[in-house]
Length: 163
Image (cartoon, rainbow, N blue to C red; front, side, top):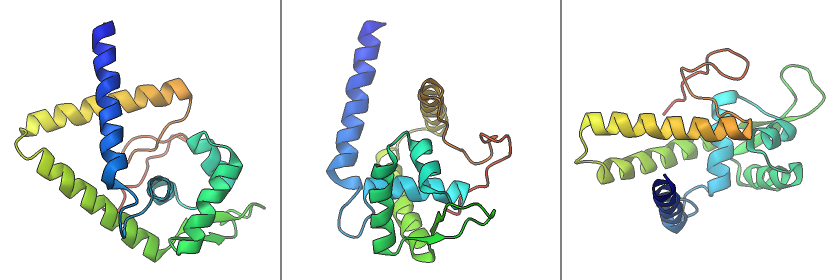
């Protein structure tokens, strides 16, 4: 089991290196933090800085800096809490959705090229194992990532993202 865990660690590190070497922050692409924040807001709707910090397990000052960059670039905006709360919320803009969807299409197209010779069964198995792994990490950290079509933290079904 130790050998397998060592192999998994190495392969996850290599995936991280590949992402860091080009998938995010390249000319015209969203930075990694922007992509992740916008993806979460797209699924959950407007969120406060505190909600985002809790969702990602980050300090509020870190999320504040990251959302400030989103606001400056026009991919997000601050709005009053739609539920009448005191905290303002961060909402994705039309430009933010456009860029998020363009980056997601770019990433999925790239994955499609890499995985072109995989069978549909291999792809389904890989997706299942990755989902299981990520959900185990989330359970360990006590923070789940909402997934379209699966019950969310409040027990309601998450809406499917447009893209």
